Image (cartoon, rainbow, N blue to C red; front, side, top):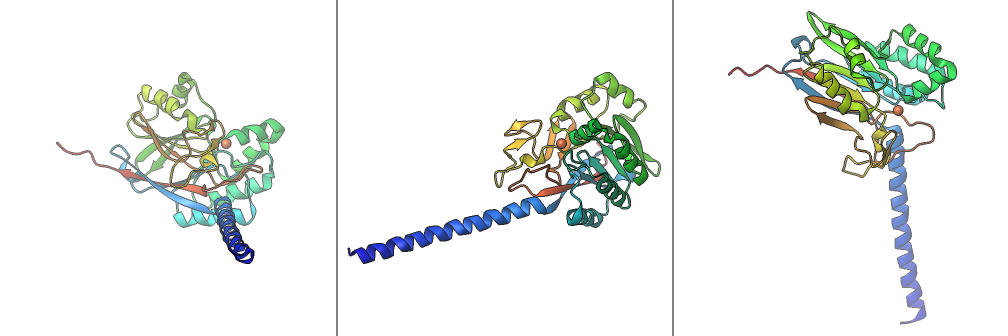
Length: 295
Ligand SMILES: [Fe+2]
């Protein structure tokens, strides 16, 4: 084979390799942009025979790990929530970010959420961190001014007509006696709605509630950020705060005894973290009232 022919063949091969590398690079760049800007609305249904009839079809939006993004990103998130037209908005912690603490951004976000539906807030690790830096009072004032109900180890009753459901919000794992105090007088037959930032606490905390006589719990969590880099077509991520490498809880539905957790992948990055195959997410949960079968 002549030297000229060998050179031509090699340059053809090189061109092919370069083209493939370029295509892979463009696809990865597109994926990076998608996973770090796009917000999906994931729908879930929770049906149980003891969901009161007035709550049948009620839509809950769960927003977690917003990390105080603001700007065009805030507009997009608010429009996505508006499109769902929820009955309640659960703000499940890390709405603020410890590296971006502009309280005006938090204030505006709370007000815009409150204009859509009644909002209930529990705290995540970033709230705890900024509270340690002296922002507790201003954060609470933001929530109060916007009409956001803060559930810092507290419970409230949601009422629709004559029907009621209890919603509890917790900021840290609790001893069972404290849980019992917070839930004193709550109806144990209807599902206990629960907002708690940390998914790794789900099984223990709901087991405590069940052993207090609550039939079932529906817990909304965040914090895991979907595992940051997800294996395509699986629910496995690489890393989650609080769980470490190859976390058990990354996103979606999980079950323990009679209780269920709906875990959001969250809708914001913290600091310089990036995600891959892991777009932002708001959870949309529709409650359903199943009738008990007559025997
Ligand atoms: Fe968190």
